[in-house]
Image (cartoon, rainbow, N blue to C red; front, side, top):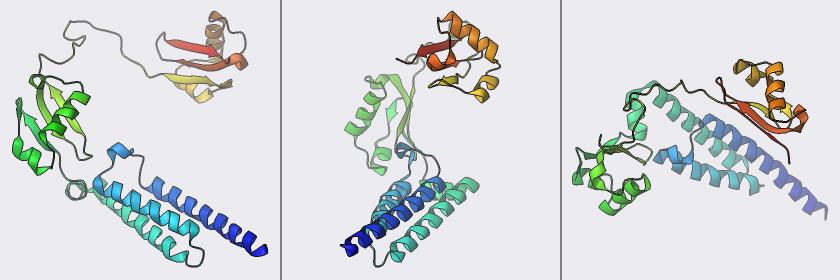
Amino acid sequence: MSDIFTEIGQVVLTSLLSLVAMFIFTRAGGKRQIAQMSPFDYLNAVTVGSIGAELATNLEQWLRPFSALIVYGVVTWFVHYSACKSNRMRSFWSGRSLILMDGGTILKANLQRCAIDLNEFLGQARVAGYFDPNEIETAILETNGQISFLPKSRARSLTPEDMQLHPAAASAWYDLIIDGQLMQDNLRAAGRDERWLDARLHAEGIGQRSEVFYAACDKGDGFFACRAI
């Protein structure tokens, strides 16, 4: 029985070590989402996940996967660092964007070059909201595998500038209260004070901040608040 508990304790320790190493590795890799990963990032993440699982369960030779995890972490950091510092290295690691459609004409050679068939291209266009190919002026395959579409001028959305309108400048929204807790830094960043906040809450029929589940405002007249129900 003692051997079982000893083995369980070893699994717990190696699992915690694996989680810590994976956390450090992920932080070093930046904050990009899966959709923003390059092919190198994606394959590296899959490999590191496998190494992390091996590290958590290989009790007799855990130093081997741990060493491999450190190597992958260092190499990944070097790749990201060199890509940030050099445009040439960035192109080497991530590749270059490729024009798939230009001037309303689909470039067959470029589709074949990046191994995208016509049906896939048209499907991506429909996902982006372009069911009519005549509405597309340019399409570019980005280095993360996504396709960006530029509509023709007659197909793009109408803007206030087109209508010669001059709306007020947009402002970011600031979280003021979350779960009844006042966010002092956000309140100051919004250029407000507690007296203003209490007045707006009273106007919404809320007497105490502790009653508020969520409240936010912008730098204009925008304000939102709701009770915890």
